[in-house]
Image (cartoon, rainbow, N blue to C red; front, side, top):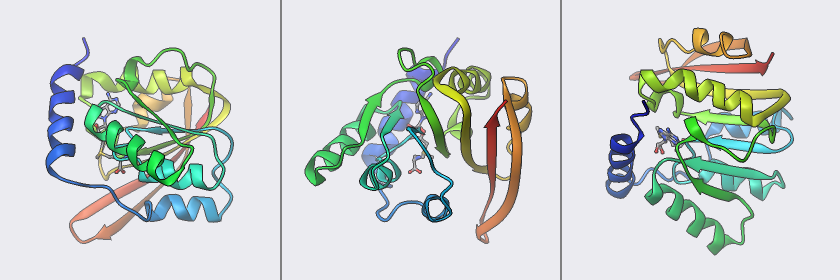
Length: 181
Ligand SMILES: C[S@@+](CC[C@H](N)C(=O)[O-])C[C@H]1O[C@@H](n2cnc3c(N)ncnc32)[C@H](O)[C@@H]1O
């Protein structure tokens, strides 16, 4: 059973009370763009206020940002409309998202996997596989130590690369590149 209803309340409250909209976008995403690693149609999973989605759409990528929080999605869509930005946004529990099968070549997951209840993680990873085309790549940033590997390898993905990096002394992150197997 999905835990989305109470998590949606949690994330709505978080987005309503703690503005986490960051312009410019995540520096890792900017580095991936500079290296030519982002390609095709992009899914921003758990897009939050949408700054990464708007950044990529501004560069010409077709982008769909999906978030459980209606407040985050309203914010993201309003910022895009105000800027004439072509990113699309959708409020949905991405673990059960239907109607977008076989659509995406690149997935950004900046904090979505780690936000999910552990019981929802297998459905999330399987959903990403269903939503992606063969050859797709997931760029995942998670708190260091989150056990994401086993979920991906048992749901159709290969872990190609994991790097640990400390963005600051208090927040150790893992950065992973995960390929459609
Ligand atoms: C740590 S925030 C990161 C937001 C954004 N990626 C960023 O970097 O600013 C995690 C996001 O995942 C979203 N989220 C959590 N569970 C979700 C689900 N089941 N489906 C879609 N989004 C979800 C939350 O609403 C929240 O916006």
